[in-house]
Length: 135
Ligand SMILES: [Zn+2]
Image 1 (tube, rainbow, N blue to C red):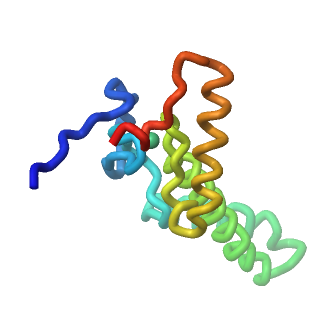
Image 2: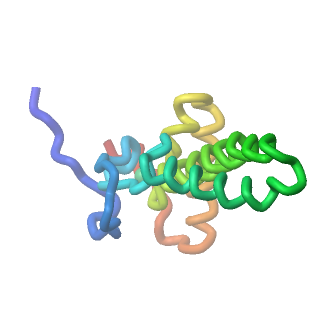
């Protein structure tokens, strides 16, 4: 069986400088890359520690040693921020495909792609085909 040549919807894609990984959009075959790792990096841990020390020493006169429990709050905040950033990057800007959503709920992901194309068609009526129908 011959392997199909990749036929991306968009070939001139913006490439991030510190890209974390490269992949091809499974729906429209556009080359994608993301900079954000969904997990905390060493740099993030340093940032969390520094913020904890700063906030902790600010709160220390009021709450005493317990003020350093703020570490868990900051940690949670970082986790949330990184995850939402990652999610934003993972969804394809060219076809609306969201891999993280697809893993969780295929129906919702499909609906999202449909909505994306409905919106795109409204803006530019000359594009009337969903890329999946080309294969
Ligand atoms: Zn795509």
